[in-house]
Image (cartoon, rainbow, N blue to C red):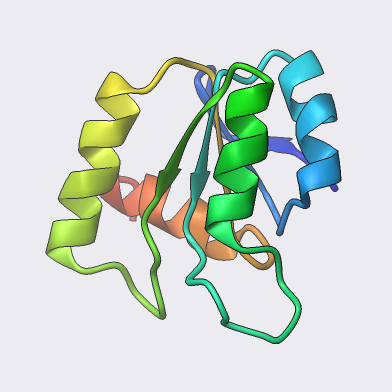
Length: 110
């Protein structure tokens, strides 16, 4: 798992596993946001499992499943989460690209 800081309050990574969440919490992250739909590929961790483990480590978890480009509704939801979730936040998807794209678009950096 490689974490890339994007701003003071938001970083991105590729897919995380339940076993990564201890490291994420120890790194100081307070929230995780999954931008990847469940069952995008066979064998990927389910969001519910990630969320349950994140909560065990005192983190909040949110789910915005994006396929392709984010819709206006998803962008609003992401922006609202960026305002309300405890920070810093780690956004993740398959490679980190959608987690970066939704952040940039919702923050006028597209």
